[in-house]
Length: 69
Picture 1 (cartoon, rainbow, N blue to C red):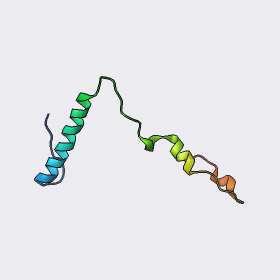
Picture 2: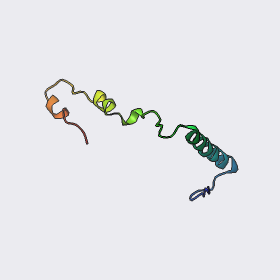
Picture 3: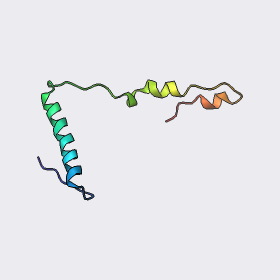
Picture 4: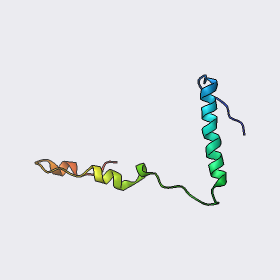
């Protein structure tokens, strides 16, 4: 495996930290059973968006009932 720095000029400490993360993730992926998937990220859950955008009562409430794209 070859890793190449495309932008910037990282210090040896920054490069070592980035490589440690890459190696840790590779080791975790190798140790996981085949076909195993990790937990789903909460940020991609549509219920999170819907819960935060409840319409407020008022004269123009109908304008706030659309589903944003």
